[in-house]
Length: 246
Image (cartoon, rainbow, N blue to C red):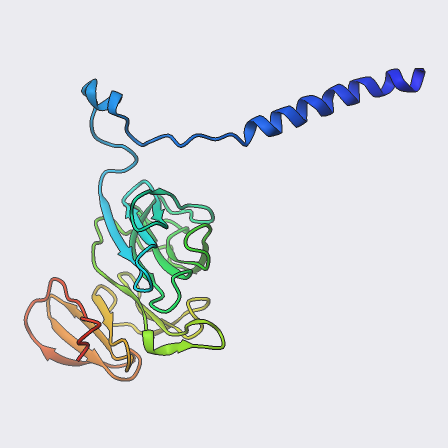
């Protein structure tokens, strides 16, 4: 009887914890802004001040990423119908660009930044459609404030069937030059120090690297190591058409 009395508090505690655990699993989605809030005259904010980047996958169009200036990342896995925060393992306050692997939409790169320099800034990689992230290239002296340039890309032609992903990727880092990865974004090396604050695109098949800025348009056929200037026009933005890449 004495042993039974000693077990009663433990049994009651276990029941409380069990009930609490079951209750805690019942979560309800809360919108950033509700109709009631809008009708009461409140506006602005709702998680960020401005969207700085958005990307959609080229596999089936179901996976999208959206980057804000101070509210982190949001993702959609159903073609943009619903969105949810995507910040597990992602520590910057904001985002300044994405690249989704054109042959494997589970994998993506994100450029982490904000209005001030921070050790959490740099490149992040996800291998599960943004369910979690890990930092793969820290760049503490990069800010990212109002940095709207497309600057990070996978090379579609570098897809490895055995590995199941595109191996080569590039990033034009505004504070450091051009970086290259040869293992799907896991590790990076600097290949050029002169074209860091540029728009960056790649040829999907050959892997040619294109950059542009206020001084012109440039092309590299050796992995971003050296570039040849093709135009002296001031370029604000550019795109490679995948159905007509040449």
